[in-house]
Image 1 (tube, rainbow, N blue to C red):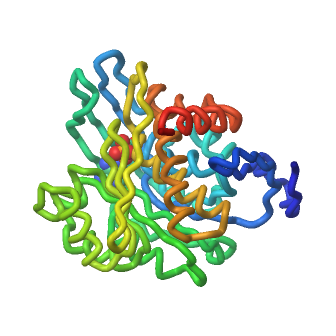
Image 2 (cartoon, rainbow, N blue to C red):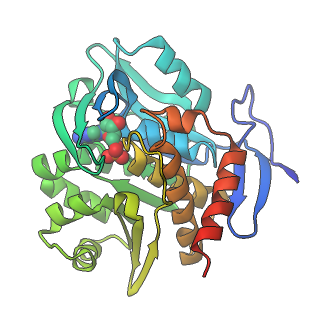
Length: 331
Ligand code: AMP
């Protein structure tokens, strides 16, 4: 079935899909409007895994999240890069995302350097170089301001707060954070949570922020900071959704061939909000379903180095993996 909504001039977004979990429908949607804005880091990552070291490869929280969400909806990126950003990486972003919100500044692109242990379950940050990200004042393009769905990927929480205020008509917003910001700007991270509907955070960071070890206690504390939904990501072990007194656990897809977990959390969150935006619904059932898409997109991300895992898949691969997920979690 093809639902023709309209046609954007010179659109790169003719391939947008809306997948409906469990009903197993795959609709091709030709999208006109900008559905989702993703703001956050675009990076040159150095990633040290036990099997390969990647040097200055395309990464960043907004990159993973935006490319993941682009499988579901037309996604606009707001980010900053330096003059050193390779053309081929610009081309990759351009092929998947609207880049009207991408600023190119004098200076070096944000850089991240991290090393995984043998089990790929622990990552140590060796270096975070903010470069052009420091003191960045993002400008929201006019056509982005009407997007009803906004994702604030890992980024300076003060910039995130300033940015979300620029949107006229937000129906659902979500943010993430990372150890670096909790350690350097804790008060701003807490303030940021009041400005969004949902916080997506990994288990270690939830513990660091709340100083609780039990994840239910962590989630309650985060909800008390002013957000309605909390999603705690537990890496390969899946994730937990909290809303009022509801707890919804979703399993990670068991995988035999994991090579690089970088960006899995961002791919998870991008798929979640992309899925929610594609349905234009924010009820609890939709949010639960979106987490399944999050797990599935995260599972692709970890099977390739850097962005490879996301870049090599097609919509049909997502559909097949959703069916597999459904099969193995049925009881
Ligand atoms: P994840 O593996 O989901 O935690 O995301 C890793 C991505 O986040 C990498 O591509 C990094 O470039 C990016 N990243 C790491 N640290 C930061 C930070 N302090 N602020 C923004 N993005 C970051």
